[in-house]
Every structure is written in structure tokens, then in C-alpha cells.
Image (cartoon, rainbow, N blue to C red):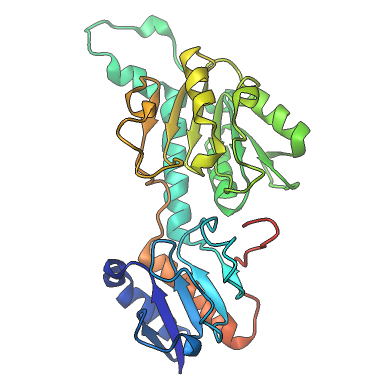
Length: 313
């Protein structure tokens, strides 16, 4: 029987106990799931890890075959010098669907001008203001074409939007115009009437949206960022919003979370703040991914979603 350490905040065990136990059992692997302090670390076979959990030093886990992250992002652990075991990030169906629904909802909100419609309470019938273009005539750009970005791009393309995707390395996705590299980024930004970022947090993506790159976007463009807060130079975005270069920003992730009450994003009339809700791991679907990776580890098969340490994700 293998030992699996659940190393998240103790209060989260109640959400995971039944689905994780059942998911592992369904694979045919016999496992004992333990909490920190309940077993000799050297006897642990798999660490189910959360950045907010109690385990941050992996030195003692000499027998662990893998560290299985409960979060999609691995930026808080990938640089940990004590982590020598294989690290797998979380890509689960529930998280993916949550991201797709968040992105689709906010892109449609911008496309249809819903904010202005909701604010119209003065009794004036403004039919002469015109109607929004069809989706096929609206250019949406997706920064990041990993599993989540690809799913969002495909969903938007399915609604008829003209979708361009950008990634560091070349991708080929049917129905999506795929660009890559520095030249590709400039071209993508120039098309972005609505820009969505689902890029990971790496040294290459830090402050990718800065004064120079924001200026490459069409004047009045809209921005949705459910990816990582470090992507945006906050001062540059606020300045771009103030001068109308960026028409509005919907931000779900920030450099400091919770976002401090005094942060200017809260009071800015052209910013919508959401509290990091775009893509949460769901216990039921996340447990299935964890269980499958444990099964693979025991069967000697390659792990799913293995992190490339050199790339940071």
C-alpha cells in the first residue's frame, strides 16, 4: 500500500477527502492518504501539494515519486531548491471549464457593450447609437495557447470571433490564427480589440504588458487578465486607462492578493476587479487528475502535465 500526503491547508481536506479517496480507489491502487505529521516523510510515495499548505521543504521526502500540484500555476514552487522530485501541474476539466466560462462571459460583455447598457437608466432610448458588430468582425487576441488558452480560444472561435493566439513557441490550432515570437507579439497586439491573457508567470512574461506594448494595441482596446498579475506593469496600465489607450480592463489576478483596499484599481472607473475566481480547482475533477497520475506512477507510465523546470511551467 502506498502513502499519499495531502499537503494543503487543513480546512481544505473536508472538500477533498471523499472525491480523492474514491478517485484513487477507482484506479485500483491501494493507498493510505495521510496529513502532515501523520507519517514518516521518507515513507511518502506522492505529495499532493498546495502553495498555501504546510509543506515547503521537500528534503525529507526522499521516497516521493512525484509532487502533484493542486493549482494550475507552479510559479510558487518551481524554483524551490529542495524540490528534486518530478513536479506535475494541475490541468483538470472543472478548472478548464471555469476559465472558458469566465473568459467567454467577459469577452461577450465587452463585445456587446453590456456595461453601457446596464448604466443606461436615464429614460433615454438610444437606438441610434447603433448595434455591435457581429462576432466575426471583432478581433480577439489570446496571449497564451496552453491547455487553458487553447480551450478559451476555441470557445471564442466557436462563437464566431476572429481569434488570434500568441505563444512563445509556435502552435497550430485549427480555426485560430497562431503567432509566436517577438514579431508575432507585436502583430497580435495590433489586432487586439479585446485582449485576453492566460500566460504563465515566468521571467519572460513579467511586465509583458507595459507602456510600449500597451501602446501597440488599438486605441480603446479592452483587456481581460485571468492569467497572472505579474504580466502587467500596473502603473503603465493605469496610465493607458487614464489617456484612453485602453478602454477598460477586467482583472482577476494581481501581484498582491487579496488586492489591498488602497490600490488604485479599486476606484478606477475603467477597471473591473474580480477576486481570483476565473479558474479554481474543483475537488472532484482535480482528484481525478491526481489519481490518474498516481496510477501512472505506479504503472511506470509518463506523468500527465509534467513541469519543464527550464521553462518554468
